[in-house]
Image (cartoon, rainbow, N blue to C red; front, top):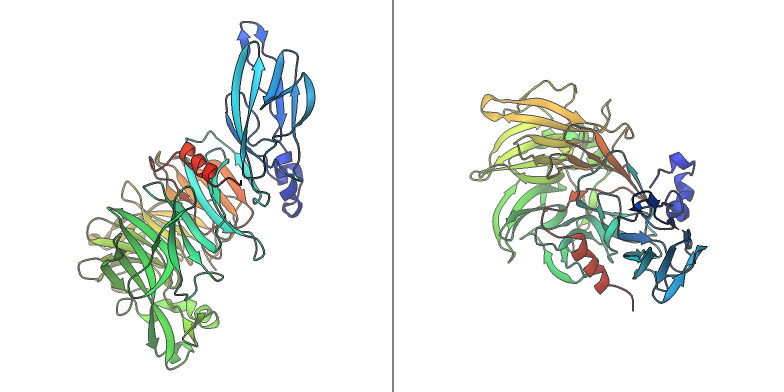
Length: 491
């Protein structure tokens, strides 16, 4: 879909017209050498109608813009038993929002069938700008456009077409398709990552059935991370209540704080491994973030304002005996030895005895409230660097880790000219073909890059999404997701 800017439509009024702009299309091909096929144009479908594409979505239904058909001599369009003669007119699918319908194009004795799923009446707006051909793939986003609007979990394909969606009863902080094809998201009953004992990772079937709740053992689910390890094992993060003297940083003498904890949990909920920041990450490492931490405590726990000096936001395995964590309130990424719990290395933030010397990075201050530290297929460390309060744009930064030599080598970064700042959130995930999918945090924008670092597409959303996650290769198909939507169709 063409961008709002390109059509001079400001985002505030773009919602009702998104699917009415730039969706007309027609296919011209030859039935035989020198004989053009009859023209068939259909407005109101997304993406634009093309004879070679057989699945679409539309805002069809009550109070929606009509689907309009234009055909030239020799072509007809059928919807059920209704035949659309030569000429133009509105196409009535006769199904409610959320349901799907089929139509057929007939010309020259040839019949091709197409399917259209009507979007829910309150489905959020989006835009899609294709810049280069995108390799096949699916990816998951989740967001809530405002406090008054429902949250959404949506799986898009590489053409910016919604292929599956679900609107949960609770806030969905971020979502992903798991290796077995189920869909998971971190649920919240409040406004975000609060100290809520009801927090959990929901796991649902494509038909929307609740299959499991993944929780941490003996602590409060944080919800920032659910990283599959195989054989039903996952890495999750948690809050652990503690007490600390914060007078030297301007806080109370007996302050309620939460340490960051990483856990490996199996499918039965047993804790196989756990690590706490207590005793490993000093309170002095919070540094410049103390002012923000003290002025914005987590939700009250047991009647007390509770502070979050570390704020873990990703966990990633590196080899057999190392886990990489990102902690926003220290501006740093750490390598943790699973066997001992000791910090093997530190990248960014304040200088400690485990800090790596960074070679080649043009940034004077390495990170600014970073997120989503991951290990790529070739061993590189990727970090979504928000650049919070730094004089630079947000970026995805890449490093070669050489902890035995006490150093890390900067090997490049990705930026998007549309993104100038990023206060929070965000992610960068490697794609199967070597490209990257990036969520720019509190900017409602997703960008795919090819292996050469060129932008492939931009997806504009109705609101920001904490993280965008590619669907693992082989985990599911668009057809399976569509069957899930079929099972959820309104009666």
